Structure formats: C-alpha cells, structure tokens
Image 1 (tube, rainbow, N blue to C red):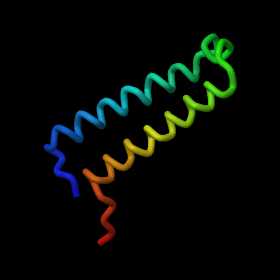
Image 2 (cartoon, rainbow, N blue to C red):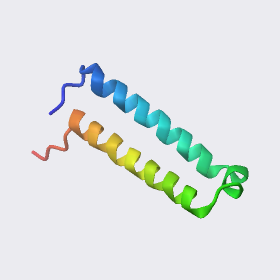
Image 3 (cartoon, rainbow, N blue to C red):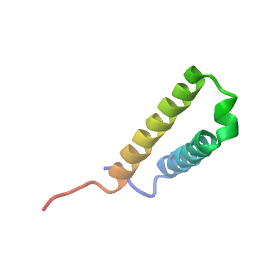
Amino acid sequence: MVDFKDTKYEQALLVYEREHAELDARLQDPDIIKSMDRLSIQRLKKRKLWLKDKIEYIRNSFYPDIIA
C-alpha cells in the first residue's frame, strides 16, 4: 500500500487527472475533432484510457478495496 502522504504519488495523480480532463475536453470539442484525422483521434483516446488506468491504479494504492 502506498502512503497517501507521499507527495510523489499525489503530484502524479494531479498531473494525470489534469491531462485526462484536458484530453476529455479536446475530444468533446467538435471543431477540434473535425480538424483531426482518425489516427490522431484514436491516439488521444488511447492516451486518455491509459491515464484513466493510471489514475485508478494510484487511487487503489491509496485506498485498497479490502473485503472484511
């Protein structure tokens, strides 16, 4: 289990959350989507999914799902 007070993980979590939100906003903007090719859009979606997985991994490290 990761100590929640570990600022390295807190900072990484904040960076990942911010980048995930930015990618989400870019993918929701129709003007940006129209100007991009399909491969670029797929790359953004894959990056967003990777970020989501990393965020969940860090959060689960802070608060493990313990079934008593």
